[in-house]
Length: 422
Image 1 (cartoon, rainbow, N blue to C red):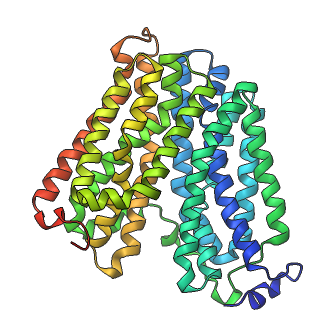
Image 2 (tube, helix red, strand yellow):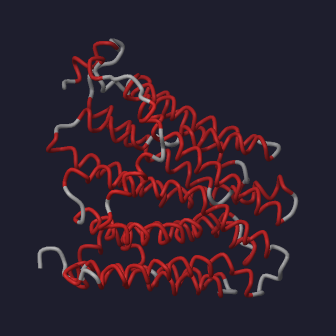
Image 3 (cartoon, rainbow, N blue to C red):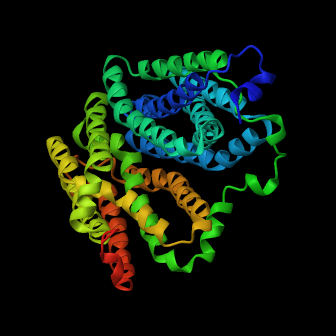
């Protein structure tokens, strides 16, 4: 498909594939950057509007769960709308919606307004699949992996730099990060309006089917794959533990150590940096050294220890040390995906990977509620009381369940102890 023919319905645009794909990459980066920018300051803003720690914890959990629910529900809707009306329209609407979300959040004078903004952000921020579809429309098959890999890299870099920027800006003014994120998203929308051509030709569009709008459809497909059911349970519990940590980190460190946005942003930057270093550089060497099976087990074991230490720590500096020492845990998710991918037929790859992503999306709904409800129960306790760490002790339990299930699964398949290619 050539850009000249696709672009004919938008004569104002000149066919410029590189500028268009750059816009998509920038959009993904800014989407995730905005999410990251909000992480260190959102708990403090909720605290300012709620008045006490217990309400702060409950409302923070509600905001996180509603954001995740909107993303989970709207991801298939945005994909179906892009198949019907084109990628360009949906990408621009999503970018503008995110800008409005951050603006509403920055201006919010009460919690219901903040909740509305977060729900709008969740609905319009579920555009990763549309961005991937745009790249697939506009790149040759032999180039597609590289460009899709760049989308993943932009996603990761947004999470690396977003919390640090949000923390530094939040130390100046609590609402400043939201206004900066809003400005970046709206500027990107304006830029895209002038450089982004449509990638989906009218003859390739299709009507919206009700089955395509069902966010649970991908999960239902896992029921027919009995050979990976054990691994699915491992993924579920490991993901749940990690997302509880992510969704409560800023609030927990504020309660326990009195941290503000600056310290929270710096630790999250360190988390992102370690994760990118492992997944982007060390993973191949670790796999060659240990093999995939042992790497998963060592990573899960490291996670159990790290979550326990997070819950026991009474000095904030310990958190920095544990983040770095826990580097093996960041190899678990990509390695599990690789093992799952090799365990299913070629014609089930798309459905399987989509199902795993659906599990992660669904956990984004439950994790904030579980973590913040525990924080609310312990919010009145002294900061050095061991019970304050209950949230991370729960994470350690979930991670331990994942470890036990992984040991059982791999014991039944001893040939998987070998590295690929050995």
